Image 1: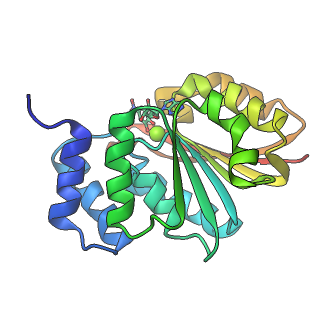
Image 2: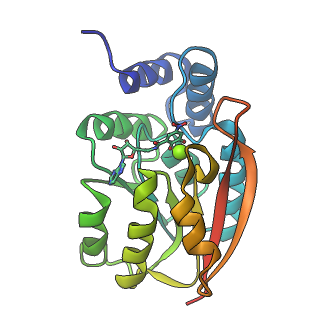
Length: 214
Ligand SMILES: O=C(NC/C=C/[C@H]1O[C@@H](n2cnc3cncnc32)[C@H](O)[C@@H]1O)c1cc([N+](=O)[O-])cc(O)c1O
Ligand SMILES: [Mg+2]
């Protein structure tokens, strides 16, 4: 059979982006997914909101749940200060192998640690494995029914501190209703919705930014 969608996205990067230039990698994926073949990257419109929150937080330690092809991994890692680390979690080995190549093509492999496996199993291992005490920033973009259990797990594992910022993709489309219920009715979070559109479409979607109050 032919190439998979992640493989076609990697090919578009190798063909159209400049090695070591994260912005050109982002532009190559956005162009391919807008004009050739849709894919579930956070995309350029919501990506600008992601960028602004990452720049505001300026995290030393960041976590991404759901790497997919590494598009948002590149978006986040390119903005991290020197010496910072982004841990990204992906359980599909085929996606992981593509994401590693896209992250390396952007020249960001020294800032990113990709953990292969299910978030529910890996989150409890992060402290011991990476010596991380807590995350300044977390981007949730994996299966939408995992947002609540993994947020609770991050709390239980002591990986959130007063001021940690959670940013969740797709809270409108495909939707994460339980997650919105959880953070909006929880005195331990200060939460705000950033309206936008589903990647590469005119469909309404947005990001929910939630600050953990400790
Ligand atoms: O379904 C969506 N995202 C799910 C993302 C899934 C990605 O995260 C991994 N994953 C999942 N649970 C995991 C647990 N642990 C590790 N990796 C995990 C999956 O292997 C996949 O690579 C989605 C759908 C649309 N859409 O319009 O339909 C738009 C979007 O922006 C989306 O993000
Ligand atoms: Mg998404």
